[in-house]
Amino acid sequence: MASVPTNKRTITLNDGNKIPVIGLGTFLSAPNEVTNAVVAAWKCGMRHFDCAQFYQNEVEVGQALRILAAQEPDFKREDIFITSKAWNSHHRPENVKKALEQTLLDLGTDYLDLYLIHWPVNFAAVEDKNAPTGIKLEPAKDGNMLLDTELSIVDTWKAFIDLQKSGKVKSIGVSNYRVSHCQKIIDETGVVPAVNQVEAHPLLIQQELLDYGKKFGMHISAYMPFGGDPSRGGSQVLGNPLVKDIAAKYGKDAGQVLCSWGIKVFDLDDER
Image (cartoon, rainbow, N blue to C red; front, side):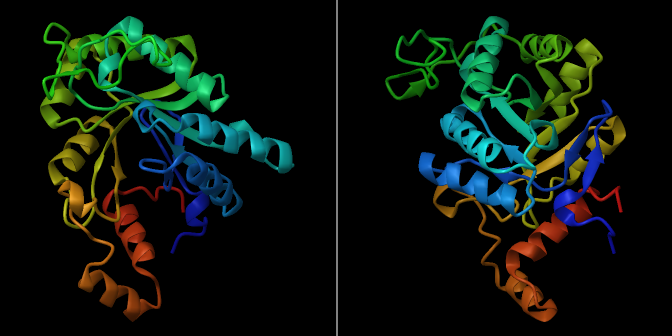
């Protein structure tokens, strides 16, 4: 049994930085909802907050952090871990910088603990004067997304490497990358992502990525550990009868069971 409480446990990434094993995801959280959730999560001991440019609620996450800084004597920026992600339409090197600067402004911080490339797909960079960065998030024409077919995922990864060197980002990684994507950027830059964040739960174990991550020292981080949204094609795990039975057997709730499964399978508990 771990001697360190789960909400205080960390693992060491391949660059030497430490990431908390459990984080609060902010995807699909409404603005006011996410502010309240971040404040409540911090008060419960949560120290990792997972954000993204595409979620369009980083301003409200930043508001929560300002509330905590003003009201909680024990709150320190250096004691929390903030992850964010650059969206597909901001993959050109000059737009990667714009995305990061906007995220830092919205969150009210001068650095990120972890910055990820959200998806291995390049949308076209279409001007939008109403967008915070001047670039449209989802450029579409006749119902089809406009792609940037001239840009390589390697170019975006090189821009991330430069951001890490600048000190504005402590760790860099990717999200939703397959083994082939990871191998390409490693082969052409020699830099292994610290993290690959993917959907993972008992119905989507991601064994190939787990094995690959261990080989290269790349941490596989699970999002939607309770399962995806069935209306969006995801698998609902939280309400699975077997999970409910296991929870009842041990006097826990289904969320605790799934968190424990994830920590065990993803080998996140190296601090005991």
